[in-house]
Image (cartoon, rainbow, N blue to C red):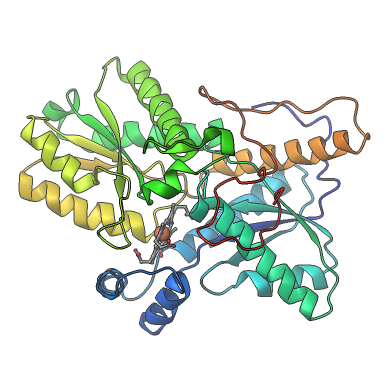
Length: 383
Ligand SMILES: CC1=C(CCC(=O)O)c2cc3nc(cc4[nH]c(cc5[nH]c(cc1n2)c(C)c5CCC(=O)O)c(CCC(=O)O)c4C)C(CCC(=O)O)=C3C
Ligand SMILES: [Fe+2]
């Protein structure tokens, strides 16, 4: 990781906002939470009932809020240990603490230059622009209340930062070790992420990255880069070349609209048919072991594998790994240094740390990046 300790100052930023999805914390929260998530998004009733059932299986509690509290704690600890004086707040899109309430609190506490860390590492409408729309909505609410408006900037995508990739390499090795010993050497790797409509995938990332052929634009390219990095590192560690593939999970929406495929369960069936001895599922698309991981992989896909008699193990996500907290610190210091350079207050632009073939992502989303189906105001970007 680059050493930005020369100037450990967050200047010009005065606070960090952890911006996440939010999840229900008890049975009474499930239906209102799902209404928040799906408002105006055309999700079939049947799918909603099914997803509600997943939450009720877990007592109506999503793991995501507890995991964000742990991440908050890890960030504050890392910042304190490294002399980075930057308060960290937390707000969500779909459940309390709601983003607007958090932003109001931040403004009341006097913060004027806020950096945002979204709990999504990749480009896509759902993982990037939709959070920028949420920020615009929250700022508009504050403006309506006559409050001073802070300026918000969003940290760049961190899918290829070593502090995100390396914990997943270790997690993949740990999952391999959970498989029966005689199945380990031949085990396949199935990298999974959230399926999204192919139309959304094709328009993900900056306009230059858009594709028209269903190849999935920046969303798929970024995931493939991470999958390859992990597969290569695991091969180096174990001395075994393993077949791997990027597959999808958690498909939603109407059946006639194409989404990214294959689904993890179909992929397991296919691998079983080909005689694969075992599979490790690596949920590279997610930052914590939330409901999409606990239900879609640990419950549904694991039951499918058991039915097939195919041994599977699942790698954990980065969660509150100290290396991920250090990655966030690195990105904060990098962006602060970039801003100081842009303002003519530093002699050079900072080093930008990234693994893989794609290089560090842009700081500011350009015009047309990850467009919405119906355009709405978005903050922290060029449009
Ligand atoms: C790309 C992506 C990420 C990863 C990036 C990121 O993290 O942001 C993600 C994360 C998450 N998605 C989550 C939950 C849900 N997502 C839904 C619906 C949808 N997700 C989509 C995409 C994504 N989703 C899409 C295109 C839809 C269709 C509706 C629409 O076009 O918006 C629905 C509605 C029911 C259903 O349709 O499944 C639910 C309940 C939770 C919380 C889990 C917990 O509670 O622990 C998390 C972290
Ligand atoms: Fe989702």
